[in-house]
Length: 305
Length: 272
Image (cartoon, rainbow over all chains, first blue to last red; front, side, top):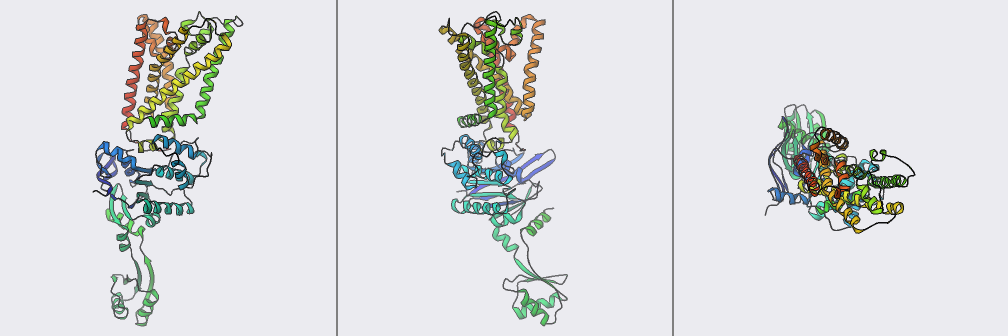
């Protein structure tokens, strides 16, 4: 059985000479929270619009829940809940009326679905307030309510935290995690706020200039971005030998500019400093560093250029 | 498709513009009735101005309503109905473009043909409902103004046939309006093009029929004239009426196909 929710092969969208999405091959498995990272204009939104059939691809194939034919894809797309980069609704209707409109349009028989979705998005008490009077955060949350109203199997959230306040962001994060854990809901989130994705996603993809330059798991990211202690000394090679002998440290790297990076999780900066200074090594600088998703992202983009 | 029609009707019920349009339509009925009442009772002698102002249908410019049923059928000939159709075009398919909500609909129901046809059916259905509501209202108003004297079932039958004959005209108008929306993607442009088309079409056709009297049938293409003709269809030959129905149905099919092709192949890239 194919456990992939979304597969694309050679997906391309060209506007004139510009390729908004270029030969993208993305793989999202069931139950994953997939964070799609990219700068503004990298192609995230276009990719989502192709997956949701709002934009027609110039080339390439899409497989959704293992379905590839146009007819099957049309049905498969009904299992998706989407929040666009800027949710839009009818300005003169309230939150309840807007969702009721879409409930009827989508043929959702459960009349309580609207109330449940509004509650989940913390909008249950908006009453008759019209959409045009909503704050940006409320609009974003209403978009989320629409996306989850039909109990989708695959949730696509395009820049979902835009306009949310810190508490809203925190609540949002919790809801996403809960939906993923309790319902095994597959989620694709795009953002250019990397710290947010770092906290929720289980898998990542980096998109740059329309190309998906890298896909990796959270475990791989943690492995590649592990914590280290950076030590700048007068003789890095000798310092490394001393650390090996006195602290049994073997997980380190020596750099040409007399920098030594110690990756051992047990190593403490104060112990290293004492050990080196007491052995006559001149210590110029010492810092505990953790290269995060930002560094990883910049490195991946750098490699792609 | 039924779900989409159902949801559109739900939304229109909440729409203030539609309510105001319905009230406006009723006001037109009442105004026309009052003026006809004044003319009929020689309280106000308007002469031919009544025809120019559209108060009296051209086909019946030498007559005044005898009873409520006749007044109700006169309403169809006043010539305002094509303008009310525009309100529904803007409120149903136009709103999706002007508010950017098209993406919410098409991301779920990806069979765009179904969506477009559903919006077309909603437009025609709502136009028919408004017409019937106005007919009922004009009947009530006519009852107060002209009474029930001389009524027989033929009046009622004619009224029902007139409403049914309006269907192809509405289909043509909604098809045309939806096509403009799909091509221009803007409600303001749609309103301008739609209104200009009606005005220009009437002027051009009038010029042609003046120069070439044999091309009188072209008048059917003008929706205002078509509505007036329908309001007194029994005064025309059956062939004339059939030709008119055929012309409007063909227009509906052509404009719907053009609009549909545009709607189906369009990339939805922008929101408000």
